Length: 167
Image (cartoon, rainbow, N blue to C red; front, side):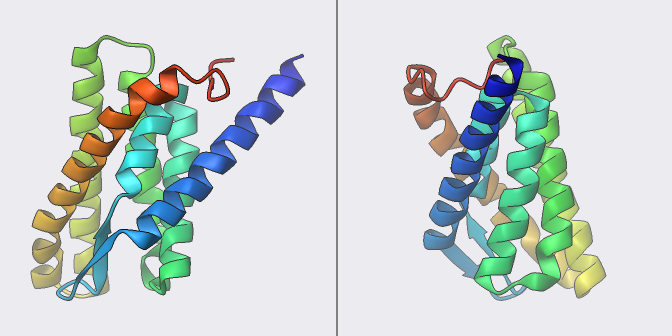
């Protein structure tokens, strides 16, 4: 029975990753200063982390970020996205999974801060301080957009027995 639950959870996470990458690939706003873009990848990360916990957030965050950068033609960002979005999902899931709303909000804020600071540092490493600082506003907007979409989708996913990541 445990193997069946693990297989089911893996399949659900794979679908969330695929949907997240597709949604983020379609809805993206270029940011010339950083040679990157603002998208909705946070929405899927937040949903997976809040529904499935830290491990689900880590998997969906890391793989969504990596695959999105690969497919969108930004391979220089892949490793950074794997680590940054993975940590973001891990933190949101740790603080927010099956917890009070206040704990979920704390997790979402800390996770978003990890993403913003992570891409600031990645921009500095890849380009320069100007590019890193230029990414801050776009990444804050990306986190807020992802949060709004996640908050809209969460009640829908909670009512769907097919999307039950609790094992």
